[in-house]
Length: 406
Image (cartoon, rainbow, N blue to C red; front, side, top):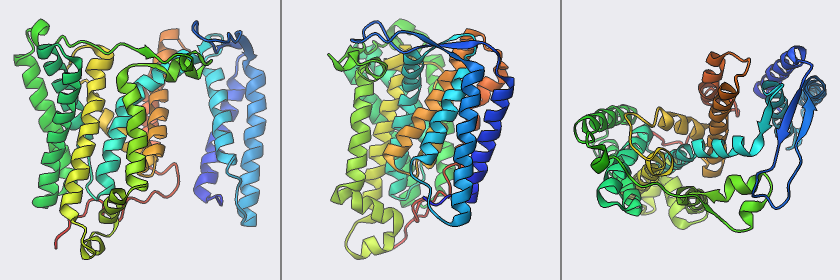
């Protein structure tokens, strides 16, 4: 990829931030713990001098930035390894600096990041399905919240955690169906419909929570999924406990990411979905039913978002709370944009958002010297940076948000 002026500016800003870390680095070490008790191979803890690592990282960052500048002036391409290498080095430098004088338990940090990213990934998949077909899905937040409420209510009444999961998918479908009807049939502005649906679901769930869920034992005490460790895989150092000692919803998320990617990019149906999201008139000309394709894609996306909402109640908290999604739908939408409307890239972006949120929780618990206000800003600053175009020029599907009239 040829370096762009925007990428060069980003590298320069991050290098400057790395220089600040280096100048402020204390003369202490950061202890790093890589193993969990269940690992087959116990990796011993080790300590990293904060100042020494920051200086080393800064030199590499400056070298990579200089390489990109030279390549830009010569008009040649950067190697594909430049940006990932820069990002990895900067991340290591940041973690060692923030955890100076403390112990960084990498497995716990990654596991918490994955847990926070699960609803974001489901939400970004819902957005990918919808927006690839040409319908802007601002209502991801409402679909997540409806899924969380329905799963708690149905699982509490039936004492069946699987029925609760099905109810969450159905609730997400209903919210998505309302969005589709107003956006596709009645040609209402899709962004306005999405915002109204979010407000409607918040108000409805708050009302039902206050009036119906006063009896917590009967209406708001759902069972929770237990973690299931996959033999051998869960004992792989570092990644094993993070990826393969999870609840069924997380394993379902792995399958969902792969299934959505395959469905959109490797099947005839996915080609039709992308066609109606790019050139609906041309798709209609060759016999593809534009409206029906969009309905199906939006509703399937709603089901995925509903399952993501169930993770809050059936996978984490074990009860429903008012507005418990806490803006996750909007961050999922940012992850979708960050990931260029690709399910795999969007999932990676959602993991990055989950990592930033978990990082501020971990540092707050350890009593980091970084001001708490700065830590609370981390996920949202990252969201703004993503939407502002951190990954370069981001182009949505051509017909995204545009109603089709025959």
